Length: 321
Image 1 (tube, rainbow, N blue to C red):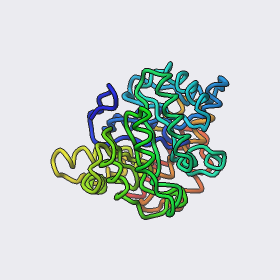
Image 2: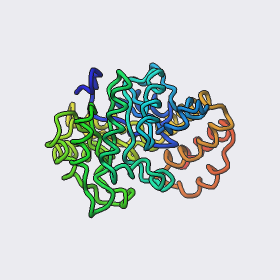
Image 3: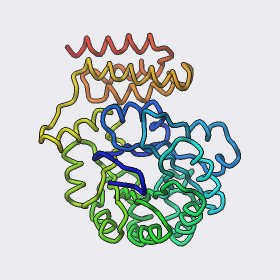
Image 4: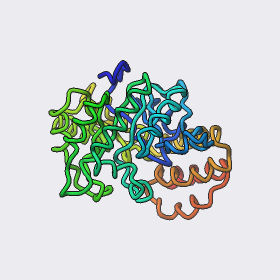
């Protein structure tokens, strides 16, 4: 598939998860076969005010392309200025967040709250498209709540305003991340627009990816929480569609090796102090569902050095022989 003039060669993309989808994790997911990655959402206000944190979130390496920078906000002019600023980084696509359900985002009229004001959302898309030369995409939810399922309406407006692709997370804002995922609405959006549609929501393995493709007709699937502590999920999806083989989860030794490489890269990019504190959540995801995971969680919560993490990895491997 193509998003504008950008070729996406593969089946599954990494979702833009705040606090997770940083450069270290994106690179790792691409290494395992992610066809496309979207970075952590960036505040349009922060971007236009030259905020250092916002600038750091927009850093993209050559190892992770094609990649998108995602911006959020509710002012068309500010969003357009942020899109211009983001396009000066080495991204391939600019994505607009119309799906974040977090109260601190949606309560301020941003993220999924834009689904309540479709005309404003379309104006934001239009202003951004006019301001940049890169393809612009939109990520939305099925609607605000069960009484307002309007993804089809919004997708049409965004396409008319110039969006080059639409990602639909098949849940309402009210649901947050609770089941079920409404694949019907993703299918309806796919049938309603001519641009590529990316299906998102509970794609956690090869079989759920297959279900998303079959039930929606989408052009690409997007993996979010299913990749936490499991970047190899992209290899599993790609292998299944290529050969029909369902790959098992990697052995414990390999999982711990991937974890250590991930955190080492995280510390390289962010420094040991920040890297090791962020490592705690990642380590908890990497050991999830293995024997003895519960007893290691307290230890994970106090990690401060790579040596401590290596010792923990050795304990996990030994306990699961």
